[in-house]
Image 1: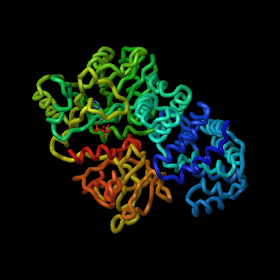
Image 2: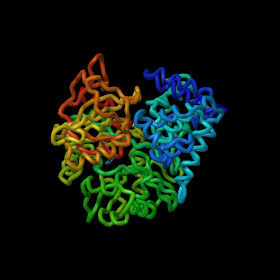
Image 3: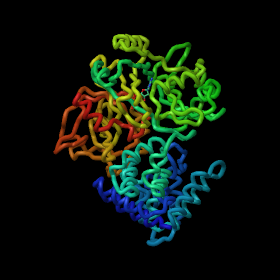
Image 4: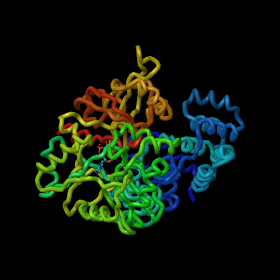
Length: 571
Ligand code: ATP
């Protein structure tokens, strides 16, 4: 069994490496020598977590509690710890300095189990219990181990490693070829459990990746849509005589898992949002005729037979007063896909068949509806349908391939689904979903707030965030306190290893990738100030950006990718 110290030493080395390939290979070299069960634990810990993406892995330890635990472990006054923290900026670094133990035999498994016990402690007295377990763990772990345990507990490993790099390292470690990463990523998009996937690859090699399918209660990543600039491009992409266009609803993506009377609703980020939408869960249990099913749809605010604007639905994003808001802002779900029915996956079935199966198992009601659509061989009719959707206040349409190969592709943004929105039809730029990685202090009327946010796009191939624009306008007064509150927990002293910022753009405050915002821009140029898809000394840059809204439904790696920006730029 490997010691936790060996994992902490690896983390320490990884922290210092900036080359993507070098980092991936180093991680792969370590994983390769572990037992499958240890691979599972090491993969979670590398990402600073203790379970699958869709599981509740929150350890429930905030900054203050962690400081208390450190005080207990080393018999130090909290005042002193706080002072050191002020100076050093990272509690993990503080712990490494205070701790004097250079060796420790504590295993990865022991650390992992203790973290699980911290997570499970709940109810009365649980805070004290969490602190006690953590203090005991820190005492045993040795200085390097304690440093990374502290960071993991606070949710910031600072290794600059995301899921994509871990998947790539699995390919290298267990198949000997980074070229197998796509196959491994496909499996991950279906299971969303990086630990389990790593463990089974370590045990059975690449063949195990191909066996992943849908399991009830375990969400798959939602399939995504491509965009086109001209309506005629749709025809070119679809390549069938018949075209199916569905109404495009502007709400919240949801995946319903029904098992008998039990229904779980998963968000786009794969969080369980059943408690937020009790009426959907109740209605789904009654109106879905199949015993077991996984269905894809969009929840919208819906009253008196009318779809209400997206802003209304946002008020339902809450943990409290659910009953009150359930009355105040009623919702409905428009279902558009069926990917599992009665024990069988439908992922590989073509869309027309999935749609037929969906229609068969739904009893439409006030809360459960079928996405309305138009199927025609006459493109003029599709255009007419789009016009009607816009007149009816919808965002646009999603054209869905009806070809034989029109399978459901979890997590993929392919040409099987194409979005066509009002904005595109009017020749306007589409918006970008970008990650905030820095901010600049405001001046004049903005004094005391941020003046602009430094926003980055996602470079998926390199698993890192590259700056694309500095957004100084579009904010309403109420946006400042809200954004600042959300950014606070992502604040870091130094830019993390997985962000790229040009010297000229250095912000006043750095943030680790966490908050995603929607930004509208005029056009894309190149600039030495930005690092997005940098070629030579110039990166891609968005001109005249305006803040539109927050995107709490997206994780940093769901942000607009460099590849997408390139394809938008080139038309
Ligand atoms: P994306 O989801 O493509 O990353 P986004 O969240 O900004 O981007 P849009 O680009 O506006 O959303 O459109 C895609 C989204 O539209 C889907 O993720 C889904 O939530 C929603 N949607 C609404 N109606 C449909 C439909 N009939 N079929 C598929 N998706 C739909």
